[in-house]
Figure 1: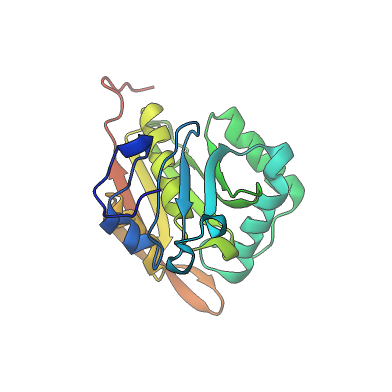
Figure 2: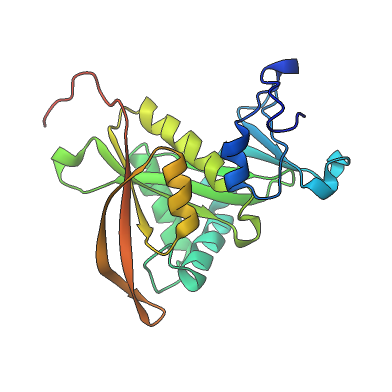
Length: 231
């Protein structure tokens, strides 16, 4: 592995991400690389463990499946519902609801991406779906990213978002939209770093934890189809 900012991109088949990009998202963690043989792998070490790679954390991008990941996805969903404003929802989701969610994503060819660690623990997941259900919105999608509470601030959300953007481009979507609680500064900062711009805020869009919540929309315009069509 190479030190971030060491300007050794491409040496020994290891790709180094830009230092400034990483140090914003991964505070006090400074080693990262992409290794041959993996579709996409992120390895992070803290300064205290920089001389001991056995303490590093290996993260791998995967495609989530209901058989393997429904239980972990439900756990992450329900933490977001119970403890955060990432989801404007009140009731924890049942296993049947999560399985139906997986089925709807599969039928519409929407990806469900995940990040697992070296023990195959699901650290987070991401997906997208229709922005609105009217036909003329067919080139717009709304995405969501959820990270396990014990795995936050380790680059998981960034890794998921980068791959999600790639998938949206491959499927020829044009507008990628995220609805973010306006108080979620870390999520807003990540979206801005990835090129999203603020498209507007709906004040008092939700009510949770005894207070009104403002919903900020951030969007990224992708190339989309060369010849978009109606219908």
